[in-house]
Image (cartoon, rainbow, N blue to C red; front, top):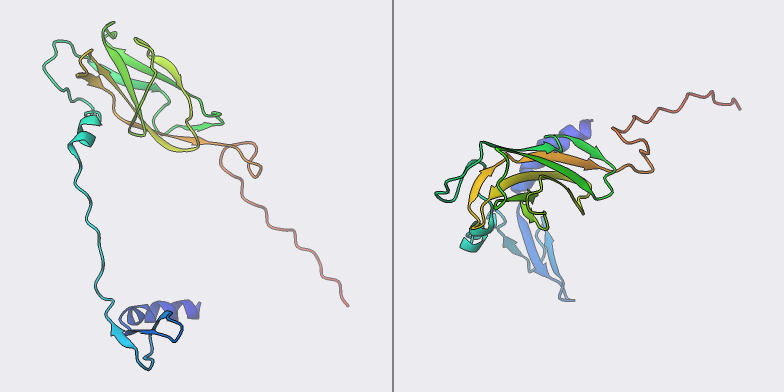
Length: 195
């Protein structure tokens, strides 16, 4: 414990230590905190950063509008679009890659409108026209987000759900029953043989 406190106390001083650079007889570049014959001092206080790239207009156009936004003056709109299954923050076990989804659209979806589904920000393709219940393949272990939107035939959004987050877990050899892992019991104390 004392060593940890000592290391934490001297850590700020180590950050500001001088750094030296030299090339040895084999052409290998070396760095050290102590000067070496023929070494040059290196200033490491400048932090190198890389700015984020500008978002392209094509990327902005391909993203779905946020919930409640519409992209034009369509005469039809929907009072509510919501994801019934999976539930927000639900943990699903052993899906084998297949997720059952159920979406509610109020009022009932018109025949010339389509439901679009976005899993982790990527549009799910192959949703049958007019369907509000279906199965998505290739949904694997981890945290996921799901969002639904209704569009007309020209691609204008008429209603959208809030994005929900859900989790997929897979049982393992270490945790075959599923659910949260149980704590490992401590070994039972045993008497030592006298000898």
